[in-house]
Each structure stands twice: as structure tokens, then as C-alpha cells.
Figure (tube, rainbow, N blue to C red):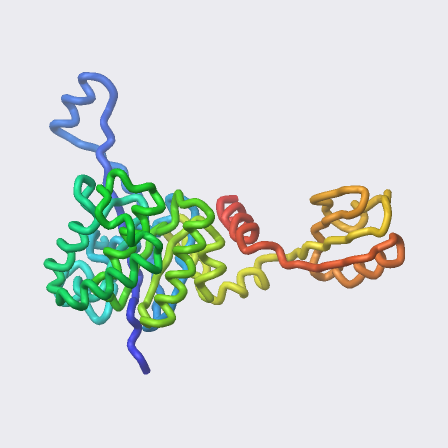
Length: 327
């Protein structure tokens, strides 16, 4: 049996923060006796990711996603539990592991702000000891695919957000990591740039076999790139399985679209929850178990020329899941 590329075993992280009493007396008292508040950011999370797998890592803000990625990257040591990345314990920070993984955080800079992107890439080449010929070939390929080859000599601070993120991705992949942690890699990008980055990641994953763990609030990223998702909420593992199983398991409704041959009036509320309505059409949310009956009644009652049944979007299902969990 092949060993997992990434493994978390009951990972738990508790942060302690000092709680200061108000006023001067509170400050003086804090010098002698401090009170702390504990916040359990991650609570007993366990999962495995096989070599070459592309997994979505989801959760609402504050769920603990970034903390888990930081522990798996060795930036944060857990309060308890254990983990393995390519056979290494991350917080031991072995050079052999550092050379085989990369962490890209959409809200953190890996590039030098006051240098051209080319010089930041050159610095990474020296740090990782990459051969010059191979370095040139990899940089040319990545920057061409990401459409930023003409921005190599522009100061990083003068790049647009989309251009900077593409350069950050180039730096992360420069040393051909076997494991890639992506934390919101498309945050703030326009639709065109998001699509280009997704297409690149899909192609790179297929050709290189890199193991990837992706967090994103854009469900388009998850739907297009990931077949499996791991969901955490309030630091606890909530779901781990195929993306399609989320809809099957947690969506009790389907969307029914009806198009009419002429202006039509009717009590469409009898079909289900009306989401959209116009003289020539209607869109309703229908319980899964009633779809066949509703379709039959609609065809018998109105001049329907087109009918379609769709699954509720993954984004809608996830949103409802988080709302249920909070309740």
C-alpha cells in the first residue's frame, strides 16, 4: 500500500491570548497575575492525502483551514497530535522536506516588493540550488503559460494583483515541489485571471503528479479542480469524501426550469419555492422526491416547450451546510 503524501493525525492547536483588565489598576494587576483566554483553532483533525491527489480544503472564515496548512508546512507547531508530509514531521523543518513542498498564501507575499520579479526568482534559484539551464526552461514555461513573461522586469509593487499572484505561483513551483499547499491562490483576481490560473493548475497537476491541498472561497476553483473535498468547521472535521457526494448527501432539492410557449399565469407556488418568475418562464426549487410528480403536473397544466432539472450548485449546498452547522 502506497504511503500517503500528506497525513494529519488528531491535529489540535490551541492559542492562548492575554486578557487585560480595563484601567490603570488592570494594567498593574496584569504585571503580577495574568489571565489568559484559550481559543481552540483546530480540534483533533485527521485525514490522509494520497500522492498526486488534488483535494479541496473548505470551511468558513475562522474554521482553522490556514492553521492546519501552517502546521503541515512546519510554520506552527501543534498543541497535540502529529502529522507527516512526504515522510517528514513538518515542524522538524528538515531541509530535505523544505526542498520538496511549497506553500502559497494568497494574502502573503513571497516576492520582494521593491525588486523586479526576475530577481526574486533568481534568489529562489540560488536558495534551492537549481541548475541555470533548468531554471531558465522552467521560468520560460511557467511565465508563458500564465501570460506574465513580459512582466519579468517590472517591480513587484507595480504589478497588478493578478500578475503578482501568477508570479507568486511561478516562485512556488520553481523547484518542482512534490507537495503543494495553496491557500486562496485566486483571491481578488478577476474572472479571466481566475480561469487562467485554474487551467494552469489543472494542467500542471496532471503532468507533474504533484499532491495539492487547496483552500478557496471561490467554488469555481473547487468544482473545476477537486474531486474530493475535506470540510472543517470550528476546527473540527465535518466532511471528507467525493465532491459529488456533498450534493447527493446534503442537498434535498433540485432546480426545475420551465419555459412556456406564451405568456402564462398560474399558482407556481404549488410546484415548490419560486426563485425566478417571468411571463414566459419560471424557476422553482423542488424536493428531490417530488421532482417526477411536479414535472408531470407542470406538463399537464401549462404550455411547456422546454423543461430542465438541475442540481443545486455546490456553492449553495456548502453555504447551507455552514448555516446548519452554526445553528
